Image 1 (cartoon, rainbow, N blue to C red):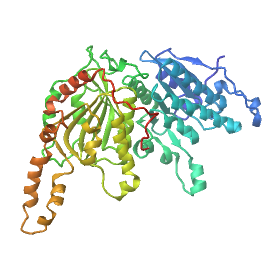
Image 2 (image 1 turned 60 degrees about the horizontal axis):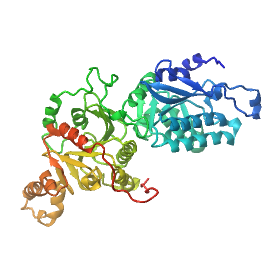
Image 3 (image 1 turned 120 degrees about the vertical axis):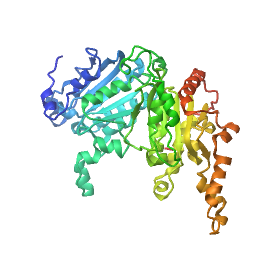
Image 4 (image 1 turned 90 degrees about the vertical axis):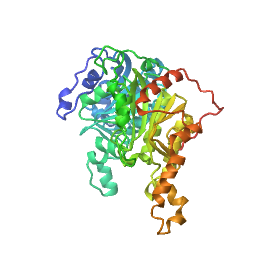
Length: 508
């Protein structure tokens, strides 16, 4: 049955129509719609007289960069994209089928919420989707694109998926909308300030990507799929085949050799001065291959995917250019979630460490830094993928342990010559060790003298290497080659440390 899509109604709002979004997302002429003739069975409130084409959601399969994907797109021009029982069952059935045929599922969300006329039946539609979201987790990638309103219970489907894309001035996500907030809390707030793209990218951490417009957003979805395995067990992301979308040359990958030499001068002369860890990441990985996400949230941590000799790796780093690279609750959540995603799909992890510790003080303690920080420890300890750690400068205290130290199962730990590995910084340690002597006003030079002694005696990477905590002390310019050789050694790594249990209890 053919339907007339109401494109103009969406265009008037400055938005694309559901079918336009699908056509931009998928390869040309590749989309095959299914369940197009589905009709709701609701008879209440005059619904028996209403025909709702495809029940307000377009579902089907297509290809992206030649590889199979499942896609659903809610059509806001049809009953406000509201979700009824059949609408929900169509989406749930698509996810179930995607699991069976092993391909990613991409949801284009643009809905006014539950279809009130259907009452609890509409809620059952949401339940069916959530159940399939959980079944699909770790089996196939799930990507949510918020192309309009996504409110109430509807937000939990994106919340269960792996990646959430938002669009400026278009995306809206919240449990309760502005009207309810005003009614219950007597507060005037706009949809944008309550749950717009900026809020969820910068403050809540719910969104992983914030895009300028819908075309830019859908192009980024296509790019992401060029990095990640399309199902558990898919090895294509780790083959060095040519990726035309990423590289302009005809070689398998491109790396500018000069970048390796530049690493020798990337660290500031002063150890307390910050720098952007991306300067290290971009000089170690293939040219223009680092694909960061959650860049606006918890900037003291950097996560994403990159290519090393054309093969996908997961990147985790603390960033001295923001808050000195210190770990707080938000950075801990950000890192732990990425580590678990990479482990779920067997993506090797490369961790860059320059961390002075966990944030001290009542604010983070009351927010639960113990619980949040424990997520990093759990995630790295449980991860059985190849794990390579590079300590560029500071690695202090519990944060040193948490950031994929050998003690948590890192396969190889490399340290640059200026690395400082210790319980705490020299000044802090001396303040405790020589507290009594420092009270004497005649000992003005004691701090500087003892700090230098402490650095040379306890903090050098050589000491950690002698104790077998560091695999090798390397010059910065050697980092890429060390990583390449380490990945080669670790190829085909199997986990021999398995215990009989249903699953562990991660500190959520």
